[in-house]
Image (tube, rainbow, N blue to C red):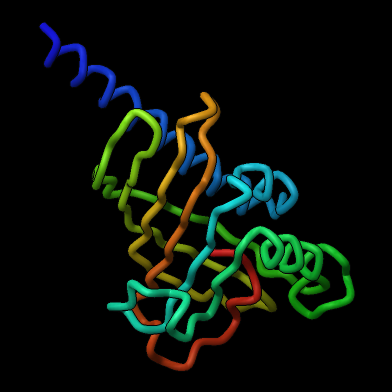
Length: 166
């Protein structure tokens, strides 16, 4: 009986995490970056590594390795209207799928998925594909991002047009 109860809780946590990830994708597609900031735990990290095998993000070069302060600055730059990425931001549509539960505890869940982003800017569509890992804290009752790692499939190539949040 206890195993059935734990399995049900695990299934419900996984479903909540997937809904949270879909909500994040929608927020980013709407370019509601302030709402995106609200999804984060203050200790969380947003990471876009260059090396597809990197695990020690603090010791390697990344496209992004943002703590709370750097996320705030990135959003400020993107919403100020003074940077090229703000004044001529790409329109995006994200598809997130292939969800797998990597780890599950009462307070922290890790979900791995695939993400395809179509970015449209100045008459050109660009495709970004990535494997993504979300670590989501459930401790406060409201899901919060603790870590998001976006592993672009072409991260070691010269990338352009990534002036938006992945």
